[in-house]
Length: 351
Image (cartoon, rainbow, N blue to C red; front, top):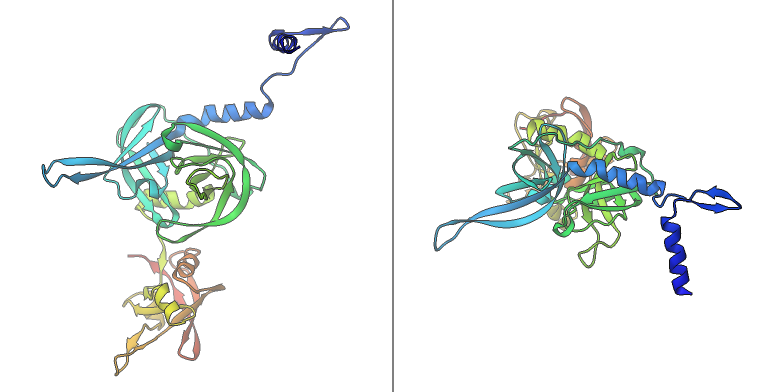
């Protein structure tokens, strides 16, 4: 019986057509429309995906020879035909030498700009390959839970690996290498493993919708919970990294006490330690902490709100300021002793 079934199944596979009541019957294609979509996206997108390898240079204390020590490897993708590559900051952090592998060819790369608070970095290939492929940009604001997504990267050093899943959740938060919160993150069940970091997350149109960045995993391997930085954040950050090497932020011109210090003393808000001369905070009348005649610290202004945003931590403070541009006038609410004060401050450019 088993032999008969095997023969029949084989016959179904190789027969171009069969006949029912004398009429030909066409068999369905073995590739479904969804499989065809996945295959086509991979075919078009994979030439734009790269491997990023970082290494550090160290001098041998005995021979004094300089040694190259591997630090790690991740993924990235071509941003434009000028040879710019986007990856995660943590992939290239601390590296003295960077190598980008594209189509089995190695190219030296240099850092153009970094944003540790967003875990993003832009590299430039110092030798420009021909016919670079670039990923089309999507719109992460149009995503919804359940939408199909595809991740391409180099997990565990296995280059150009494709995994498929769905958007599991939206508006997640993860911690950046600088301990800042990254908001609006995409959660996906597409398998993401070490080495996938910096690789693209694509939608069913083959458009870039995110950068695969982190996983939640008790074991260190994929547990079906991966996180990607949304492409709309890249649209804001990457042009600044290309132009200035960093994210440009408006500033007040203050030095703040650490979150640990404010928690230790039960302070609600962010205490200003020092106000810098010639900058908006000083011009608006904000004051920092000082020592009284006994040598005790006397608080000045403690920032509790920026416009409608409540400020409890330095991360809250930085995130609130990122909503505004240089030259914007904003309202700052502080507590000075028992008094609640409000200041109108015009933001200036960071120096």
